[in-house]
Length: 333
Image 1 (cartoon, rainbow, N blue to C red):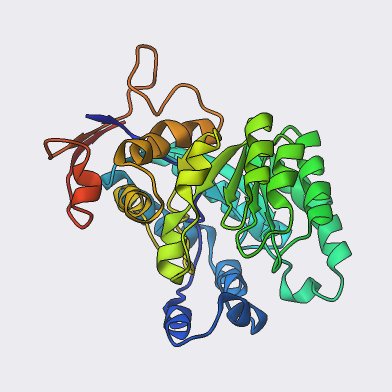
Image 2 (cartoon, rainbow, N blue to C red):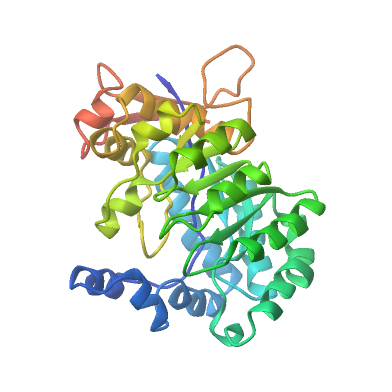
């Protein structure tokens, strides 16, 4: 018996399919090339804008049920595939409905600053103004936190700081997609702002991790992205040994990590990121809870929420030892 998994980073509300881009990456195109050609996140934005709220809810609920079957009992869900006010708010309303209708705790995050949409690329400042103003005003009531993709292909450190400070002034916790594609100073910004988490961290340095440790910012590692993108894995051993609180998450999304299984993520972390199975399980349970600001789950102690999963296995080591096996026998929410 283990605590229920806490998946601290997902983009599970979306419409459309990007299997064609997956095939293009296998043939040698880079993520950045696909994004510059109007694909990537922008492709999902077009499909999500065109989808009704009911359709988004239906498809997202299917994903949540599959996640629960794999042992997840709390999941963070981001907006970020609208990139205009109405669709961003619609996505967060869907997250609210998922939380109300399904036996899963759904933690909503506003990610209007995912990338700059096509129609705003000639005037980035105007889009940042929109995110900090009317979009945030419409979305903040539905969100617990605000995220920004701070990286070479997305938002600069200064743009990210401005957006996150605006969100914090509205009572939202802040988190950052940090230094995934290159080191731009996003992890350091997360520490400066005392962000609840910095996620990805593929290019973070030892100095960045020390700043995060001092600030109390958790590190959310996403090995399924490296697996799907065929990229080098972040050094999970170095992150763990730095003293930063480590979480694991699926990053479930239609493009770079179409993964719904936390057991699979645990296996990847143990096999490819230098974590022990014990550490990976802790990061997928207690670490995930702490990365979302919860102290009442991710552990089996008196007073904690009784979110449990039962493994059909003699030991938790089988989560990594048998990575393709379905060993989650029961889930208690």
